[in-house]
Length: 321
Image 1 (tube, helix red, strand yellow):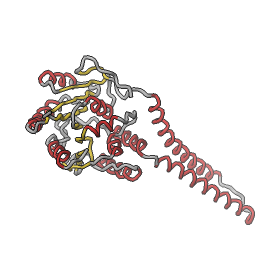
Image 2 (cartoon, rainbow, N blue to C red):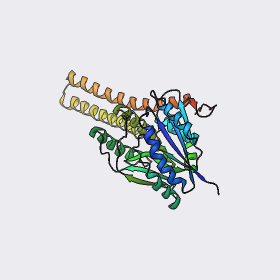
Image 3 (cartoon, rainbow, N blue to C red):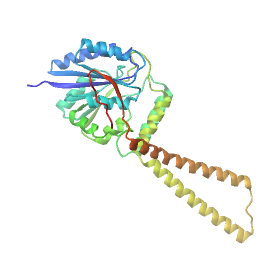
Image 4 (tube, rainbow, N blue to C red):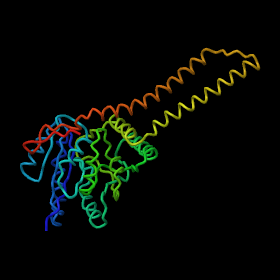
């Protein structure tokens, strides 16, 4: 009987301190899977790291031939790294994990059991809380998930992470969407499939610092909203209709006061304030439209989502999406 293969995809950006600890922890989990006739395949994606991350991966590769790696020519972002890993994975089952051990490796066993015994297509790890994180970041994270869950047609759940185990069918479906502007949580939600969440307590990084600044997370959240909802466009349309109606009512009031009471229209200061207010609304709506147009512009240029500088294969085809 042919042994099944589980591919582990690990996006890495300046994770030299975490990688040895991650690999050591994963070997314990790997042994338990090997006992069930499941082989492992590690795919490390170096997302343009500026530290010793790539060399550490190469050293691990020298000691373990089930390790494979891809190194980008620069930092293209985690979304590109995850997509590259999915393209390279050959396993029957594929897992996405972070190298900082904030995604507990021991959960893989429970995830696999849910796929095999309960016939789920995707099992995703869900944090019970955001204990240990800055209060402001936790607050805005909750606001973002509440907002996008209301304005998006796809269900995006608060606390669900990128840590997930999925079948080959799910991966093939994911790879069929090679769009440039990516938000994987939303894309997985769009795919559907039979999905289950497993809750776990939030875990701190074993070493190093988070690469996600508040500003980067804010931009990422904005891209997610633009990518998975057209409600902002509807808001711009609604504001246009609303102010058109208000303007019409004000014109009628002015005409009525002038004809009936002979009351001239005066007050240049109030007029200037109104002009500034309405102009700001117009610019706001124009900004919303521009955000969508910019995404269309990036998609139509058809540039590569990432460029591979080096991999464990002698020749690696550059992926043009």
